[in-house]
Figure 1 (cartoon, helix red, strand yellow):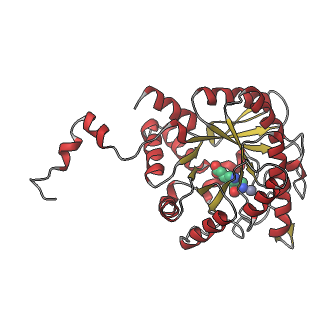
Figure 2 (cartoon, helix red, strand yellow):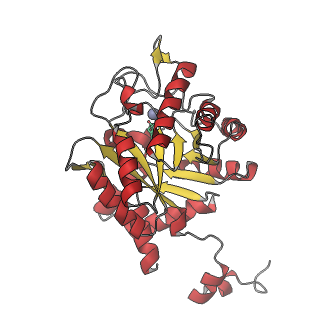
Figure 3 (spheres, rainbow, N blue to C red):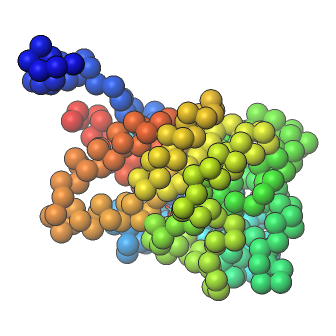
Length: 326
Ligand code: PBG
Ligand code: ZN
């Protein structure tokens, strides 16, 4: 293509042409909104590092879930902040746990909204790690049993889908087997297949009160330097029965999103995590960037990289922007 025979600007010069040749499309159907449910009543506490995002007790979660549904967003992802934490995270699989309660109430009051539950131990363990601690490290195989109990109790409460985020080896297969042998063959697993040990989770740990009390998560979450390992992680989960794969975080790992998209034919989700959200919000609040523009550009970038679904704290804003046009 040589100038002046070809002029790239010809097809770019008019809005109607730009619309016609646009390659990447973002729809409200692509969005999943994460929410933090806490114990008590009448609670609605803003997370200081995540303006616009709150820890809420069940009745407030249900109210916001109704608004999310009205905006046309198909699904929410629930995280729980329990009243008590212990060494084995037993409140993760109580029938009366915060997530179980929230699932039941959302399904009763907003039945058209899909409820996905995050399956992990770090919000429920006193030490803040994603599994059972033995000898100073997380014991993989012992943790699998806890995750299965947690996933099952979410399914019993009425969860539409479960999303394990712990990064133990073999958890997708173990959870699939636990669900199937208890009659939940129709419940899909969205696997946090490729999850990096990331500084971008900082604000989330305030939101979910899940910071590890000692050490870090590098013995189970992935090294940010690794690309081939992402393929190995994803292929394990595919073979173990994952229905949707996820890459996390989003923007710093767009190459990995593309890699996984090219390698596998399962639906692919990307998690635009708390730190990514906080940075945009902080800059916008300072008047340093145009929030709407930057948020929409971020969403398009995640889709262009190959994601089908986007988990994002911006979901409500994005749905409103899509509705009014941009
Ligand atoms: C728990 C979990 C984390 C996130 C989702 N599930 C934190 C972590 O692994 O430390 C991060 C989400 C976010 O930062 O928005 N395992
Ligand atoms: Zn965890």
